[in-house]
Structure formats: C-alpha cells, structure tokens
Amino acid sequence: MVDSAEMIVPRLSDEFILTLQLGCGLAIGTLPTGGQRSQRIVDGGRIIGERLTGDLVAKACIHMLLDRADNVVVVEISYPIRTSDGQMLRMVGQGYRTGGEAGVITLTIAFEVDENGPHAWLGRSMFLAYGDAGSNLELHVAEVR
Image 1 (cartoon, helix red, strand yellow):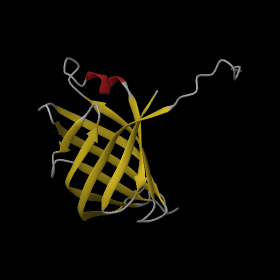
Image 2: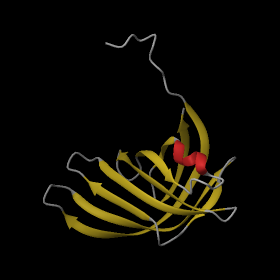
Image 3: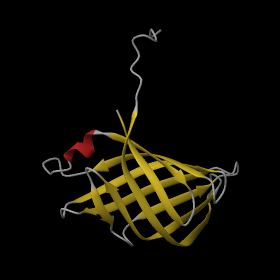
Image 4: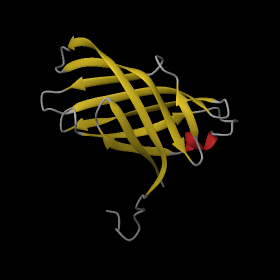
C-alpha cells in the first residue's frame, strides 16, 4: 500500500482555449456491440494560448461520437492543427459528453508533434479538456503537471 504522504498529486495548469465550429452529423448506425455511432464534420476551429496558437485544418478533423444506452456519449477526436508559426501537429483525445446535447464534455488530450520542432514540449505532456457541449464548442485545455 502506498503511503498518502508519498503520493504525487497532479495539478492542472490552464494552457489553451479550443473553439470548434461543428457542422452536420453523419450517422453510421447501430453497432453490434451497442450504441449509435456518428461523426460530426468540423467546419473550423482555433486553439489560443500563451505558448500555442493555431487553426484546425477544417474538413480534415475527426470528431466521432458513440451514443451509449446510458445517455453517455463517448467522444473521440483527431484534429490536425496548423500553428501560427507554420508548424503542423495533431491533437488526439478521448472522453465523454454527459447531460445531453447541452451537457458537459471532458476529454484526455495528447499531441503528436515533431520532436525536433518548437512545440516538442506538447508531446511530453498530457492535457485535460473540459467545457459545455453544443455546436460551437469552447473547451478549456489544461496541462496535467
């Protein structure tokens, strides 16, 4: 058993605000394992922070949803981002939307980046995104430290 005095307690450090404009949905249907699978088109978006600013590459983003029977929606994302300094990176994540269409989204986020580029630090960190659901999402992204 681990002594609670020895445990490292993670903390969150606000890093970015991610805004998304979600377009129409594409219904895939009912999966054999249960739930309704769909995908949302991402019409655009922007990530703004002190250490990173950029635009989502619209129409190349993947925003997958799995509506479960318990009214929880599993959210999977893959967003290519062109940074303000011209670098390309990819934001990937998975999490949940609870509370219906106007509920809350919480995602764990990781970045794929050029290890020799100016944003290599993103690839060595883990992030948590959270915010209100809706067709125009504003997610707050915090680094887990």
